[in-house]
Image 1 (tube, rainbow, N blue to C red):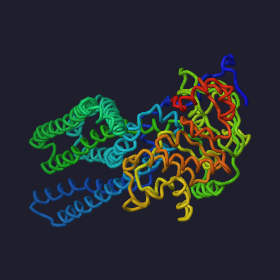
Image 2: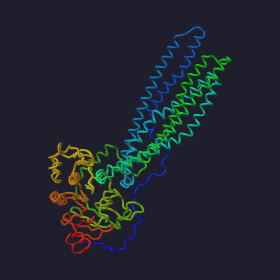
Image 3: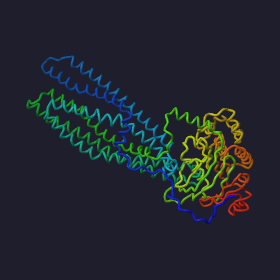
Image 4: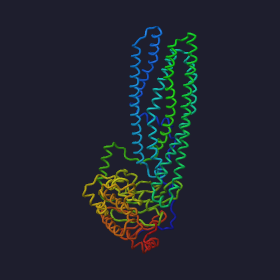
Amino acid sequence: MSAAPSVETPRTCPGGHSRTGGDPVGVRSGHRALAAHLHRQRGRMAVGVGLGLAGSVMGLAQPLAAKRVMDGMSRGQPEAWPVVVLSLLVVAGALLVGLGHYVLQWSSESMVYTARRRLTERLLRLRVPVVERTEPGDLIARVTSDTALLRQAVPQAVSAAVTGTLVTAATVVMMGLLDAVLLCVTLAVVAVVGVIVAVVAPRIGRATRHTQESVGQIGAALERVFGAFRTVKASGAERREAAALHRTAEEARRTGVRAAAWEAVSATASAVVVQVSFLVVLGVGGARVTSGAISVSTLVAFLLYLFALAPRIGQLAEGVGQFQVCSAAAVRIEHIERLEVEQLEAEPVREREATHAKAASECGGPPVGVAFHEVCFAYRPGLPRVHHEVTFSVPPRGLTAFVGPSGAGKTTVFSLIERFYEPAAGRVLLDGEDVRRWPLTRLRASIGYVEQDVPVLAGTLRDNLTLGTVEPGDEELARVLRMARLDTLTDRLPHGLDTDVGHRGSRLSGGERQRVAIARALLRRPRLLLLDEATSQLDAANEAALRDTITETALDTTVLVVAHRLSTVTSADRIVVMEAGRVRAVGTHAQLMECDALYGELARTQLLGR
């Protein structure tokens, strides 16, 4: 037996905290963030914009064709072919614009799909500390509602920026060729729109960003409630939680109304300016027709161009607003893309799948030894250290139990082995090699881990049992079901292994969820099995049966158990007693009963110190 004196003054652990990911700093501007998403669809967008531009250019010839018809009528020589050409231009232009709009919509859907695929993959690779300090509901909102806003960027913002700008410029040129005086009058009035848009656009972006943040808070609040749904109901807290949700929804409504108000200002200004410009041009143009400076057909053609210009001005103003909306969403998406993730091996998909298969095939290999050497750790900077120079070693094979009061750092041992966190000082060794040198895929494929809260995912029982493993054979699955005492459960379920277990396994009892988690871990044929209070919710009969299963598994596997029941640890090959983040003593049950007062006290109270 070895023991660490509880009164020993520890050496100061450097850093005093774990290296965890933080919130990103220096997030790129919204325009650059949006441009990164648009760049991936540049080919399709070019085709869509080109088609729309071609259709719009055809529309530029329509006023000239109308002028030709009116000039012929004024000479008493009406011509039919300009009408035919005008009709063909209208039809062809509409078809090209419609086709271009379809291609742009296709591009926008592809952009949203690509963004969601990148984000979901990145979310699943986030480091555990990052997830623990981030609201899950807000992360979900960024993948769902924020990416949906990107859908508006291609057909509206991009089309307005490219097609609207070019066609507007071409329209202005044609109007200048018809009459420079009327063009100057028009531009003087339209310039007002540019000033208003320049002032309003940034406010639209800020209001939209605040709205999306409020939407994310709604998701976070809902996730919080559904994560403890029964507790909320049992506490009679429905009204209180509903009031909190209402406050969050009110904030989203308020910021949404603010964004809508600024968008309305922009749209209204555009509409008013267009109408004013039409009236001014009509008055000035009528005077010029009366003076003989221009013909009636020229005034009609100019007004037709002005009618064509009006929606373009509105499109540009709306496009600027949509660009601000999409930029705000892109900034929030960019935030996720800058969160710290686990560095998995950079491999092509097929090679990665081969690596997973190889790692899975290694399961059932020789058991691994575990050692901690002067490990210091805290969950976040500024928090008290959870581990103070923790040192112990566990040889391959056998059952090792960790006991101690609540907060002693027992579960943290497992988290450090799995590399959910990394120590600030010291080393965690598996087979004599620092776990930081193990590829994560190989490390976690070698470990079976049963968490304290035994999470079960929505889906079928089979989905939960085979989570992250190569599809096992029927014989292997039946063997594990018997070992975990789940065979009687599957026999009475309506669809056997294909029965849906509900949200977070709500259709299973606590003990059944624990057995599912144990079966899942055993199915991996791990070289190292970590069990964190894995039998705490089982009845006496099932606990005894699973205790025998764990003892049998320990004959050819290294098994580490965090336990609070005396019956779980008395047969352990070694027991590690932890207190206040230190290893207090190591030995068998009999040795510790003689030599360690804390263990003796815990044993007398059935190790119920939680």
